[in-house]
Image (cartoon, rainbow, N blue to C red; front, side, top):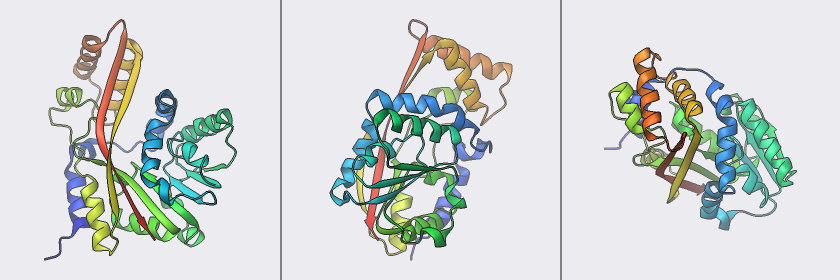
Length: 274
């Protein structure tokens, strides 16, 4: 019996704590976090993005035109632009694109064009088989209709496609603090195996490489408390109880008035030829 992985994706995603509690606030969170993300990727000179690109470097050619969906602060767009003719960086957050543009100028890169829109707003007919590589890193969790979005990615390429999604347990949001506030284990619900099998059911036999990543969050004590209050406001009411939990937790784990959190996990780099 053929397993309906798209249906399983919808069910698991909807039932996960992350999706169950998350409020729809548009691009506000990404706008507010843009500079933090920029600073994080600058600390290791785009090391995370370069690690992803290393997986697919054998297929990348100097004359490539690349579409980067959910480009953020340039995690992939900046290192990719050094290898290809042109990168279209697509992101709904104006602030993310602003820091990307500033970073490109600082790095002396002039072949990135930014587009401030969501992937859903892109006209399929206008991008059909337009790019040599279409890449989407850590954005597929946003889509309930992930199978449809994967095929839109597939159809926008005339060469290759690459999607990046987390593998196994992840600690992107402090899981201990999450449990203290929500009283439920932190769980993303879905991981890369759903993506791989959805592609398989569509006749696409993708390659998979799993990589390790580390994300470092570091802020002064009061800034960290303010950030976590804002972050958890997307999931629950920030009551006096929640405020106290956050303040106590950050204070207890701060060193010299600085809170530093390293999140570690694994991501699957999934790529295929059109």
